[in-house]
Amino acid sequence: MPAHSRPGFPKAPPPRGPNSPRIPSFYRPRPSATPPLTGPRLRSALPARKIVGLLSELRPQQMFLRAVSSGLTSLFRTPGLAAVTAMSTGTFVQLDPLNYRDGARVEPVDSSGTEKAFEPATGRVIATLQCSGETEVHLAVKSAKAAFEIWRKKSGMERGQVLLEAARLIKEQKDAIATMETINNGKSIFEARLDIDTSWQCLEYYAGLAASMAGEHVQLPNGSFGYTRREPLGVCVGIGAWNYPFQIACWKSAPALACGNAMIFKPSPFTPVSALLLAEIYTKAGAPPGLFNVVQGGAATGQFLCQHRDVAKVSFTGSVPTGMKIMEMSAKGIKPVTLELGGKSPLIIFSDCDLEDAVKGALVANFLTQGQVCCNGTRVFVQKEIIDKFTKEVVKQTQNIRIGDPLLEDTRMGPLINGPHLERVLGFIKSAKEEGATVLYGGEPYEPTDPKLKHGYYMTPCILTNCRDDMTCVREEIFGPVMSILPFKTEAEVLERANDTTFGLAAGVFTRDIQRAHRVAADLQAGTCYINNYNVSPVELPFGGYKKSGEEVGMHKPATVASAATPVFLSL
Ligand SMILES: NC(=O)c1ccc[n+]([C@@H]2O[C@H](COP(=O)([O-])OP(=O)(O)OC[C@H]3O[C@@H](n4cnc5c(N)ncnc54)[C@H](O)[C@@H]3O)[C@@H](O)[C@H]2O)c1
Image (cartoon, rainbow, N blue to C red; front, top):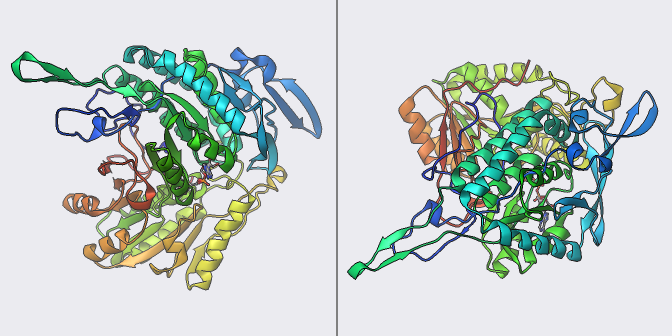
């Protein structure tokens, strides 16, 4: 999941009707007299739940911020999330409990160890989380089951109202949530705000769907009739990645809750903080306590969740190797699973493109969130006639990307998520050079001039040329700001090379030839294909993958985003 608010795209969708292509997958499929349908019938649905309001309004006594300024350390109660908005890099520490159960923050009753969460911009520890043990996971499931019994009896309209209120609260607190996201994840505040927009939009979207998801009436011979009902699955588990922490929590919980389920969400241990804000918002919006619980932890906690006999479904966002384990565990319990996994997506730039847009598109496809985006178009295929011109311009624009304190308004690239990940990304660049690639620009550790950022995990965005399809940097997901440029001659050739991958999350094409654009989009084996744009993710469209990028059981329903908007420009 991306997850993915994308700049330059039309604004907030209104709630949609039942015929929308994006059907939640958290309903229990029911036997039907009619031939099986794709979409609603094949998919299942997640739990719905209220939003708990602001931290300050809910439990001011539990929210502390440690402010470090001018060498002095003070501990004070926050006057609310608004205080977070006003915070600067290097000052936030989260001391509240990070689990959420029965409508309140709690410490887990048992734990399988602790994990430290960092502020990537400074390398400071901002939270130490207790990894929930088996007993805590069981308590979270028990609490969610009780909430489910209340929630499943609500009408779709009632569930939609709670989701709408939650969306409103997110909107109201957008800047504060975005600030928290930037502090814990490192993405620029400019991007974090866009993520929060697609978060509340998702809740609004499913709020609109909730009341209209219905079963069918079927006429039978001799005046008899039959009908189908749409029933929620029960307690669903959401497991998230660290690159879009709040947005992933919303994108998983909104469809689940809209369909009448309860959800237990486990964030990545790298980004434990913002899911709590969503839990509090749901509670404040009127969800019964327990409907959206948060348990913190790593692999062991995730396994307890997946293996729990009362968990009906697992929705996972993360890497392919973990996705395989999740699928295996879920198979043992005959549980449906949704997998949103990694990618190595192609971006194809034909010589008849609008070059300026194509360059912007390549930047957006590679450097958002410091390149830590699942659907990034990191294999940039450029037609030979324009490759020199394209490369020169893309290097020029990349040099202008402002790297630094992610909370500053004009920063466009912040730090990577942590030290080991930065080392891993730099390792890919080293091996690319060893295999014969040329670094045209970047790919080095970077130290911003501001001394408080000295221990942050920064690097310069990297552009590689002289790449071949068989190189490690071209085949494997790097998950960092590394663009590989590859020349091509013909449409047929580039299609074959673009599809020659075990992934299939996204793809892009830049051309002025409208017929070619749609022909190529149709032949690309990818869950989403962008035409003359990249990395826009409207909530109305499905987001899934081919091959190892993951998908729900069922037919591929690839989305093509043919954009009239210009790709957002990353440099200032
Ligand atoms: N397709 C999408 O929508 C999408 C969106 C965002 C990120 N991603 C992918 O996510 C990956 C990066 O995220 P990551 O590093 O957090 O991935 P990861 O697979 O390491 O971890 C993802 C989550 O799974 C948990 N986990 C790890 N081992 C587990 C186990 N054995 N059982 C249960 N849970 C377990 C982690 O604690 C974390 O919450 C990239 O590959 C990226 O492409 C995909």
